[in-house]
Structure formats: structure tokens, C-alpha cells
Image (cartoon, rainbow, N blue to C red; front, side, top):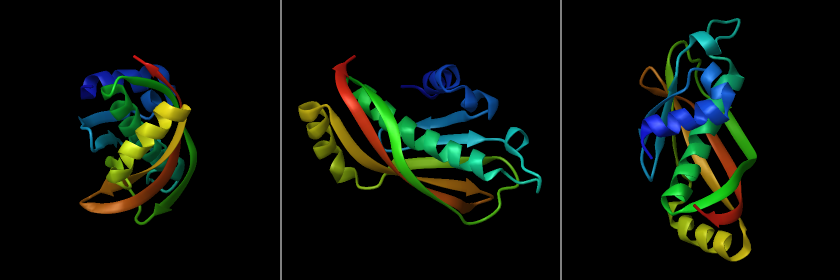
Length: 150
């Protein structure tokens, strides 16, 4: 999937991503990079609202799984089950979220479980970057439900 195709999908199917002006910078099988500007995500302290930061991190993590599953010809309902977000520094401008699998070696067992049982869980990490430093971290557990061929 190209960055443009993923961005179009996010904006069409997750309207919050459009309102937040999320932009897809990179799409790869091992990571996704999203960016967002300060203006539509600003809080009363003139930094990024924590909910916006968390939403962009979740979008990056979800996008990684969705892209990987689609590249393997699988359509599924993909939902976040739980997450933990830590905020390490204020974000006072445009920022990025970079997602990756917590344990890449768990992808094959995840796929086997999904195909065999129609349900599987996997953990994804996302880091928020601003001004050359890590500004936040997401640890999310996602559940894939169903495994239909595309």
C-alpha cells in the first residue's frame, strides 16, 4: 500500500484522522510513520493535546497491522483491545508517530492463530517524536477478528 492510499483510507474511514490533519509519511512492512501538525491538535497550553497524541499513535499502530494483513491478502476486523500511553515531553509543533511490532517473531504465530481460529492478538509499539526526541510511547494490544481473503 502506498502512503497516499493509506492516507486516503484513513481520512475516508476514520474521520478524526482528517480533522487532525494526519499525513502518512512512510509505509513499510515493519513500520508506519504518520505525522500531524500542532494547529488542529492544540490544547490550552499551546502544545499537542494528549488525546490527539494518543490517537495518532494508535492510528500508526493500527495502520501497521492493517497494511501487513492486506499485504498477505487478508481482510479482517482489527480493533484495539487495550493500550498504555506514556508522555515524556511536551509537543509544541508538528510531530510523528512511528509504529512497529513489539516482537516481530510473533507475526507468524499470530497469522497461524488468525487463520486457524479466526481470532488473534498481537502487540504493537508506537513512539511519538518531536524536535529530535521521543515525546511519548504507546504499547497497544490489537485483536484481529475473522480472516477473509481479499
